[in-house]
Length: 251
Image (cartoon, rainbow, N blue to C red; front, side, top):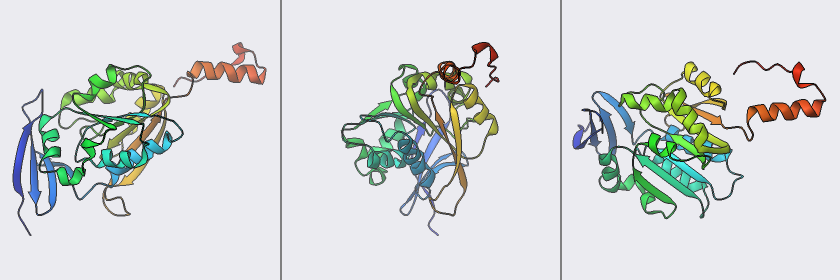
């Protein structure tokens, strides 16, 4: 078997940690210490992150989609195959080296995706990009770190806890979808999404895109079309029931 070769390294802003881009034959891997964060052999769940989220918003014209985490481009490429010519995809990537790799040694994986006029590439913390908009995006796709529990950067935890989820909720248009990739299940995260006001589906997907490989998770969290209180009042009025008689359980 061919040995792995170190191609380049990149420091994660705000930390002393270093990502390593490795190559073995035609295979690439991005490592943090002994942890493999992503591999060019395992793209199925990254593709599913885009296709599942875009399917939930397929009835919308001129969608605006935010992808947090460039990775090896699998999510971006999958999104580009299903969005229309007038739609917009913003990609936020924190690590400058990851963007450089996409234009250099990993360019064959990206297949000119970064040159697509529908794509806007930003070297930025996706949390800052989310925070800067209100009711703007139709879908936010997060493939940052290893999922809801930060591995590469403790600041990433903020994306997945109550405050970050409220900001994602605010950045989505009514009916918009927050899609989150994870290396494994996390029931506590599902509950946090629900407490933030989302309706939630937790989907198991294979890393390879087939029936083999590790099981990863994708949460599809939808912001309601109308505030929950408004929908409840509408339902009460339609049913002819007095408001005082209605008692909703806490989310």
